[in-house]
Image (cartoon, rainbow over all chains, first blue to last red; front, side, top):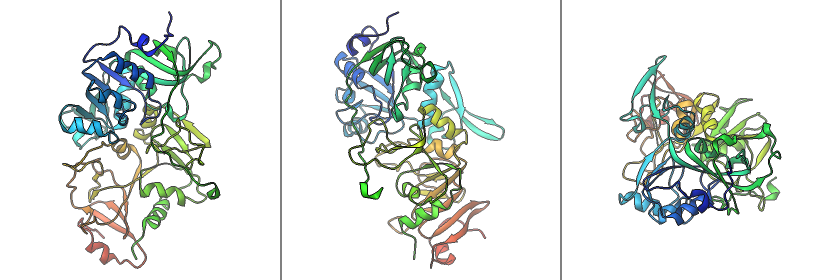
Length: 234
Length: 208
């Protein structure tokens, strides 16, 4: 089965519907699926629920989908870097479900691993646990969290072969593998599609079984906080 | 004289032991890395990295290499990378020996509030709730009082909690206090600061 597609539009074709749930990889602007986000903007699909650790910045990353009002709800752990996000949220146009970062990652991983719910001590005794089932294990309280089963996943990897085996680069891996796992259909954009056999099977970060559609393209890879040190300090 | 930011960070670095895997929060906790000396400490960045190095030289920034504060950083010869689920697995699983983080309020029972002020802009808890729930030793570094002069060490937190009964040790500009049965215990005073001065600046119960 052919997994390689020519563009984000082609890859997204036939998968989109209003009100769908999308899991997106990335942390801040690092390792975000820039091309597939652009494809979603072009498609005009709306009332999206997006599970993503962050919500981009104004005019870049998921911020583009906020600017076009295509997002109904975000499931995130940290959203502060986006004025348009805050405007829509404070005016009630946009729903926001805060998830502790590790809980969000595990909810995605669990969904991809066929686990509908799990107990964690993260958030016990805080607003996060309100309305959720608590269970005691060995004298300690844990809160029930649900696996996320997304309609599609949109993720960014460094390299793929045409069977969808993925390699990520440095901290751009972040939420991409768990997000990829939890989608019914997983779309991946990479910097380079390499010939079959050129990736060391022992060094595959995510096996191609999780990957359904692959595109290749140029990435802007914008830096959110450029921090450096002076040479003489070394 | 109360400690300044760097002295607080230096005091916090004394909490770290050779061989520890440690997570440092933003603000003063980040400065702790400057004071670990010869100790073999591995810094975790919860976006998916163990062995975090210093900021890059100008022109060598890599957009694929950032810390949890989204700042460009570098890798070391011990560095490993992993995904977010694995990262929080090691946090929740108690593999990280210590977390040093800032706070708005700490209560005498170890409750911690550092993620939201009702009515103000709420950005989210990020990884803070997972860290305080899972890491073995939670050390808070913060000023003893807020800008109005009110104690930040309280009988009970007034702000929404990040974690319940999670704080082990508090390092302030006035000294070091441990969360123990019945309240807080003074374990160290900044040079020239007396125990009485710490008591006077603290709302929480101080036990002997």
